[in-house]
Image: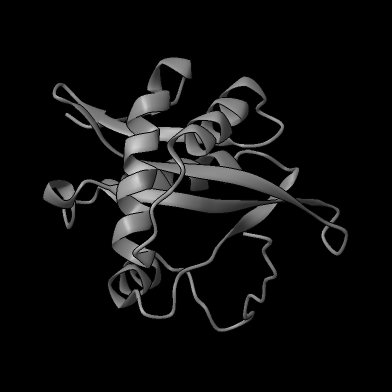
Length: 150
């Protein structure tokens, strides 16, 4: 049986492996091992930065996602941003992401200080876009622009 739980410090290595695999798979990028592990640990030690959630079963972790927070002055409330989504290849198309998403949506729905959920997705990741659309999300409103130092 699959369950969703908040990640703890003991999950750093699992989440790091997921993120390394995701970066390689989606962007052909190799993450710096010390940096990604330090970044994950920073979030797990300071929930003001965000929260990781893991989908697990008796065999271990199946997938994970991170939520971070954006303050919306228009709504006078917080928006959850879903980031760093990863589901092991052998567990895809089995509803694992849907369970993670529904967990986050229930958290957002139960809090009057949270206006909603957003995420960004690579334009070429059409499988993920189909999954997000099937859950009632849409990409019709905003286009994300960015500037990153690295």
